[in-house]
Length: 570
Image (cartoon, rainbow, N blue to C red):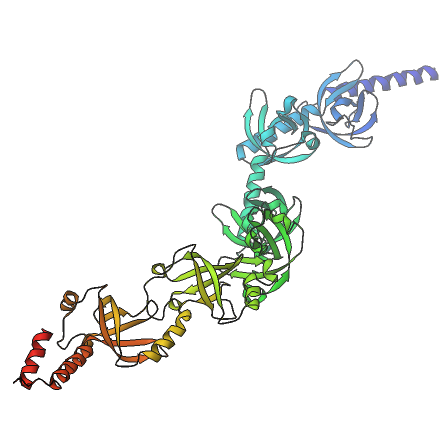
């Protein structure tokens, strides 16, 4: 009897347990999330303690991440929702995914309506790289163009990463939508750019990384914005391409040259960090200085030579040698050579320096001067005639120059009136120093020095000479005494009566030969003054004397003689 009572008591307990479980199942809320604890994980399912008489069974696949890995373990807490009851086997089927979808959709809806950002995880790259699927509880579409500001080169690297997104579009019926990360990045970048630009000022030195090199310059990433260094602001020296000085990935320091806050642009300079080497160029490289410098470039017309960073000079082909123009620049210099050169010209304003190689040697003109003496008469061929000077080739590679003031002792209008190209002439060496163009200084008028000495010796004041009228001007008449000697007759010495210019031109013709009397000379200045008037007076006196000494017994009076002289003069 006691045994049956025990069995009956056990059956009653089982019946009561079944009743309680049935009641527990009937009280399940299929809409409210339940927090449970994982108590067992096997190959296909996960058993969860949901705080009831029966456990929840969850499909294991719902806990696998985008990469197929299970990131949960026994004892972990988990939120799920009840789906259905298996009364026969006595368990409840639960789902995490359905809860996530439900909560996720509510989350993206709220984000869309309030225009706020929402977090999500990139879980899949769509075929043809059209975009990504992003897990926000509910899966959303992220177009490839909206995943980043820059083009994405390796989409797979974004898998499994969480980002903030902006909901651009929702489809209520399908519970799908389109999101964007780019919008947030652009907003963030704009804020950072505004903040950075407002914190900078022209003249600041900033650090950055070279990101892109173009023909016209290089872009430097300053953090939230790129600055541009134009090619001409990279170096004070000449560069063909920015790659000659810069490389992608290099960290550089640059000076801010300009900030355009409206267009969000920053102009940078590298060379401006340093003092312009051309500022003190005249003291560092005065004309005549000899230096060792590096040949950086060869061109048809010469070679470019770097004196220092940012200072480059031109060695022109004509300054390579005194022995004529060479066939090739490479006969004398090559890229990388470090020859001695001499500064021969400096233009600070245009930042140009002209260098010479041949100037290191004695010039042919200097050698010529050493072989000849001042005052020596030399022969040469007229190479070129200008109004103001004549160039004479004395020997190959040696030229002399005669200035117009050294052609005649008297004033002449143009050297072209006295010389023709290719004619052979004699001249006198005037100096043992070359002129500023490195020409031998020559004179022509000095050849007539003996003629002038002879003239002053023989033609004293009162001497009568034959002259040829060369020019009539408002001051008098210029006459030619000989090829090298010229004289002048002032207005007062032309006639007893003061003639007008018109009367002088009527009575005296250019080219006419006449006799005149020497009235004054200046041997030092090579000046001769003559007079027609004084000659006429002299001859009148001679005529009077001739008649007065005549033995003629006629009744001719002195008055008759004066009258005769006057008639003769007329």
